[in-house]
Image (cartoon, rainbow, N blue to C red; front, side, top):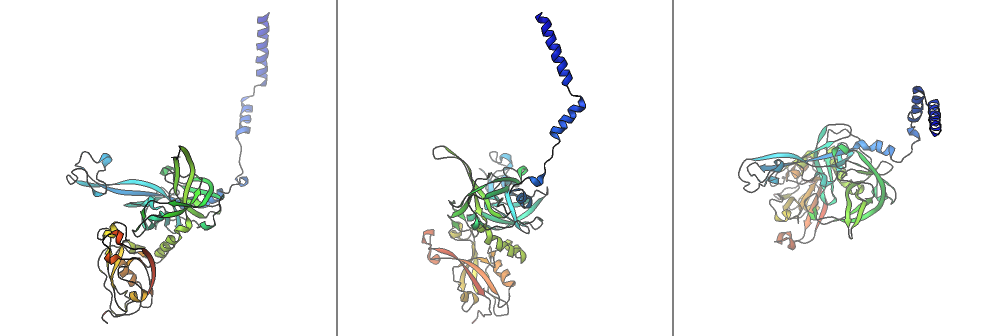
Length: 430
């Protein structure tokens, strides 16, 4: 009897399942009702969408290539093809044939702030023998050149004349508020992840972060404390030099550092990123724009250490100084970073424009009309672009007791001073 009842129950269940089973067409319609959906993007609200759409393509990747010299003779060096870095061989490095090879040493991010002008961190481009830029809109790598930097602030500008990308608007980082959104765009970890967007809030606007001893853009060593913006948006290796934007799409900071790992009694630290305020970079940007628009950028690449002789009163402008270039190869104080590289004034002619402006012997000229004074030719070229009656802008570094110093401890206090030199006719023979 139990067997009969079991068979009847199975039969009833089988008939019920068969009665409620869908046809293939009905099943397809049921599936379509579930998966054939749509989303109206106009109804999706976010403070980030329009910002990212407007600025993401202006955030670029930066590739830092470095050339290494090695000897193929030494069997203990050259793993991966690289031996004596920077031109120094390994053991017995003077033997064998020396060769050079280029390697991608680092990658980072940058932001277009003017026509072809890209703002980034100095540590992204430092020591590069060749720089290129990659974009989200092209697979091409664009050749770039370093045009200005401030190592102590970890800022640099590179120029890519062929780069046709819109510049992002700059904000006023002094107006940042704790709690507002921070939108970061960059290339974390690898080139394949370029254009990555992360978001968080501004945690603090004036974190005083002490840097290691570094050099400014003229070569003077300093230990400085930088004012940084603290955010909790994710920042990883490769994000350096990218953009931190507000909800208006304005560039407010440049991601530079992050804290991670364990500190003190094993406490884990995450979500602490530091950005350089955009206002810190504005003077550097302004100078570079002027150099671009006046065609003066190419002058920064000139080299040479010859003496500059002033012109006599022949209608051509002259500064009225005797000078020589000082570098880390010919001046101990520059080598040690106690003095910036530039053009040392040996003497100032009486009744000259230089004397009238207040320039003194032992002043080190570091800039002329906004161009870094890498050689005496910078003065010659600047004077060649002026006429009598014009004003020449000169920045010098003036240090106490240089003429008597035998060691760094003998040097007194130093400071950068800006001069405006009115160019008038004078005769060095009178």
